[in-house]
Image (cartoon, rainbow, N blue to C red; front, side):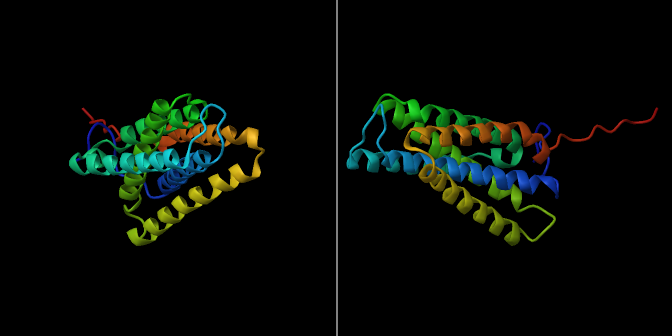
Amino acid sequence: CIDGGDLPAPPLGAPLILLFITIVAGGGLAAMHVNLLVTRSAISLSREEIAWMLSLCGLGMLAAQIFHAKLDWLVTVPRRLAGLTLGLLAVALFMFPVAASMAELSGIIVAAGWSSATLRLVTSFWISGGGAPSGVKLGFQHSAASIGQALAPLAIAIVAPGAQPLVLWGIGGLSLALLVSLPLAWRPPAIVKSSA
């Protein structure tokens, strides 16, 4: 059941968009996790608090998976779902370096976990469409997730300590750029004109 103009992804350009979304979703979450371990200017976290934040992230991911198991948004409105979730991920990435309290940080971490899990679900569902065997595309999608999880911590390791928020903001900017490119992955239905 396709609702409101979201059609199955076309065979050529859409898988690349979906792979980039997977890279950004995994990279954004990995960058946050690494940043939890380094000293923050506003909040210095203890070992227990870091463990709590990582658990909150996992709970946010679990909540998203249960939520989407009960609804059909992955099928009926994938473009809107991906757009809202990329926007939420971008907001979380932009706000993370400037969070000033544990409550703010907790909300940001849950939002990031929710976003990453949702984006992984929507890309996994739609990348396994036609054109190539779904196992091949899913293999590429899981590889893309690993690329994001490897590149983001590497970028944080390379940049100067004071520039680490720039990595998060850069990934947030990529999330917004991908949000703009979503019509390439899910095209609206063509309007057929009947001849009178």
